[in-house]
Length: 503
Image 1: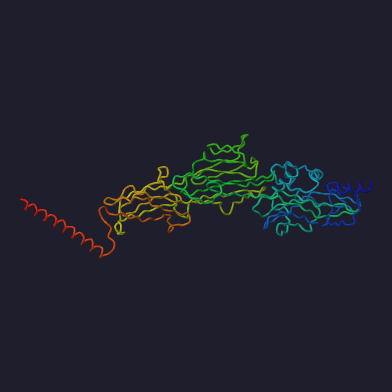
Image 2 (image 1 turned 30 degrees about the vertical axis):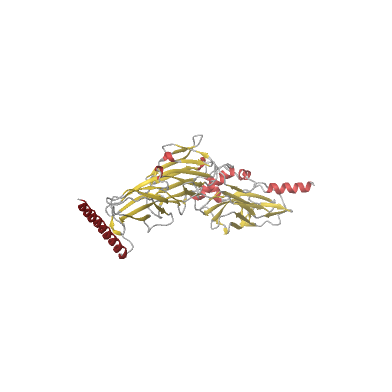
């Protein structure tokens, strides 16, 4: 029982760097040309193992940077650890870590590290982050690329020691990772085992909607106020990252007029933030979470992720569809892009390749007014009221159309739907149309790329009767008129004759 307990204790403590024990070392191999400096009788351990990182994004590249080397003294059977030359160079220029010892380092952790939360403030996270920043500005630090296959990256046949793993090519945000390929005592032997760690990877993204928050396309009329929403996924940067940029850039077409900063509302998760008229966005404790900048048709929202408590932000604001809006299916676009840091320890940023875009469309109705039966005779002065319902109620009045000298008149800037045209003034000398005319404006048809639905409407001339039925009808009509005149003349002559006889 005592022997088993002793063996278990040895195995646990050996896993912690800096602890040394005398163990029968039948499996340790060394490089006799590389003696240690802490223990001059020790030599560099060449035992191999693999560091496997899972959860890697397909197509990303990672590299390992060694922190600790392992040495073994075959006489004393003792294992020791020393900082690598690269890591010593980092320590020598650091005010915070220049006096760090191997013993202190090994006290930071007994295993591996994958920290991706801004709420984590461990000593190893801080140290690893500082070293990562140093690596970004010192290309001389030795990097060993990991081989990738799908979502797994592997540092194969690596020497025993401690490694920092960083992405070298990615559009995502990785947490700092430390993997320890330490020696372990098993059955009285030193062995080096493979180590598996899971990458913590965060995405930065945005999506934009219009209207009720469920659509990317919609239709509106001139003067309508339009609500836009931007939903952003905020990455969890490592606690000690030095580059945490997260900026949303929004650009409106000329057909949209921004209602101003006072129309902006921002939420951190479900918590509403305070948006001041000067563009400063603060939380309940007064921390400045973002700054809004407006430049013409562009709006920029620059966030300080240290004060964002959730992984989502929501931006909403309003704009008015103005008379510069483009009619038809091409629509009026409003796109949002995201600029963010995917290099937490360097200076690099990444911008979304394609903006998240919404399209607002508007249309028009054009009337051609002409004399009944004579399309070449166009009529000016016809006036129509345009309603959005068949009741023709006042609150549904959309606008009016009056025909010009060429017989045409147009109402622009109306959303898709069914409309009713009621003539309220007829051209001089022509009769007023009694019934409203129904017109449908579709949001899927572009009316020849103009966005304008054309309607032909005729008017009868006052006092004219329609001539129909051909010449036979005309002959009968004329004959009847002659017979009626003859009858009237006969009655007149007959009465006059009778009158003379009475006298």
